[in-house]
Length: 150
Image 1 (cartoon, helix red, strand yellow):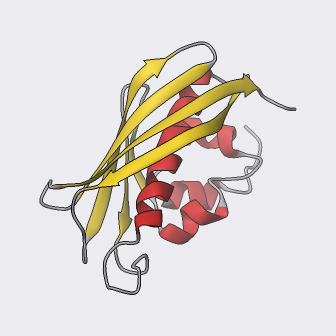
Image 2: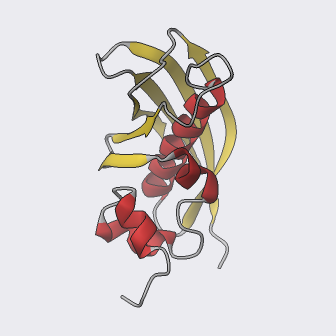
């Protein structure tokens, strides 16, 4: 493997080394890095990542709803990309979320599981929980799998 310009940021974000080459062109993306996303599990059956509440709050001192969606989309897109393989690229066509509870401190964990994995479309559910395991929000993301541009 040749030198990847994103190795340091990928390692800091918890991305296993076997996936580094997949992110050679753009890394994880600036927004994912700005929110402080840390990946804990990256398998076809489950993707798990977390973000700190601190630094990602809205003006009322709770985790911004958009941060929930960034975490959900980061997980859903990467899971779809893994499912599609190296010749396919995920293209998000729908994401929605329902917020059940607020978080004002600590870390929020997103757990992404597949609902449908097809040849041209993937659907994932992403559940965000607080450090006590309480559900904060539930998201669903649909990705088309398109041929990867070289």
